[in-house]
Image 1 (tube, rainbow, N blue to C red):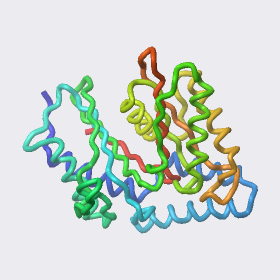
Image 2 (image 1 turned 90 degrees about the vertical axis):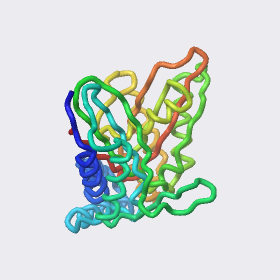
Image 3 (image 1 turned 60 degrees about the vertical axis):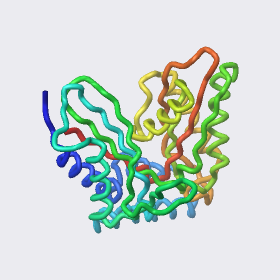
Length: 280
């Protein structure tokens, strides 16, 4: 049985929160530069140049890329032969978020009650998803999720008879309805299958993949490309001002489902699409 102290987890989570908020992922940077080459309009090119310049400043100054530093979504893959010592794993994660947002001077955006509100003052609690896996390691993924894009997400309990065409239509319609609100160019996570809540989790998980990766199943890889083409044909463009690059990528994740259902969730993320991985 391998042991890791709760303090080790806390320190790593704190580091990851700051890193993800201040330094643009290389896959997103590549996609933005590719988008700049694809755009022909002066306004769209200008918007993408400003986005990249903003990311460069944030990187060099170690400052947040965006004023909305998000709600901390934390995915944990916990090896069954791993033991956390000297404290609770969940408490360690939340203390890491608390410390990272304080030390990184990141905006605290979490309210204690969804209706009665009241800021918690430290961006906790995080939303934590756990999975028990083989081995003795702890794999951590931190996703600081801004709500300008999160609010544009949707779930639909599609009928199996709608088929792939129904899925494609729902995803494209969701992006069209979002318009400029999620700060395009966006990344679109799509979850298909499972149950109501599983589809939503799949869509969020899809956003942790590199934006230029493909689904391992050629059928869904083709669907990713089809969706990207249809979304970019909407002409929403960078920051909603028109252009060829409305989305940087579409990532699909799937899971087996019931014979009577075909759940589909769309989780939209802004052009920053912050995500960071670590293994302890």
